[in-house]
Length: 219
Image (cartoon, rainbow, N blue to C red; front, side):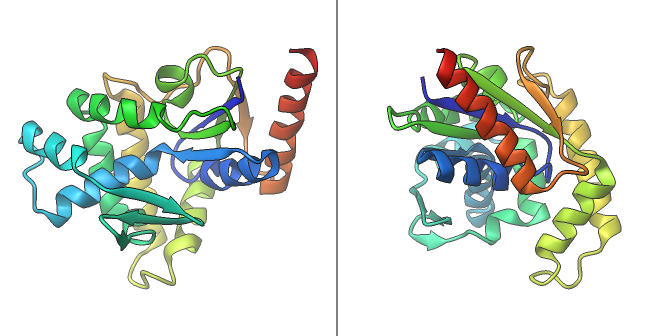
């Protein structure tokens, strides 16, 4: 089975790493976090009451999603930047605690796994969605490094954002992800944990590629 899962907290580098690993291997990539962010944005666009689970699930099931050349489209609109705001991320984290929402997205996530191969990026890819993955990676990094990464990523698009605000939001998001009752953010028992704090993207990518090549050789 050609499947690698890469889990970790916000700004641990899993998105960029997943894209590069998939490009090198010639596989597809699943950004599961984008699915939750798309769900959040779709609900926000329609002013959906997040406490009305039935309405939220209905919105999610009617989303038209398309990933193309690194861009993300929701109902034919390019929302690549819109889904990366901290507000959308916080709403996505809120939705991720709702069992009905997670259930609505499971089949969609499973549909990405094809013979070609898949790198699945998220928070519960190796523990819940693809526990059968032959290679599971869990990326970690200290809060300050992750906050600075996110700040540098969005400061030009949001000049009013501050590092302190990002750090505080990220701290809250981490706590919410780790302590939720359903699919909490935790490394799978057989996952390889990589601390990316002092590593370059290339170093992390090369490490994962080498691990996969070893698995392939002896499988």
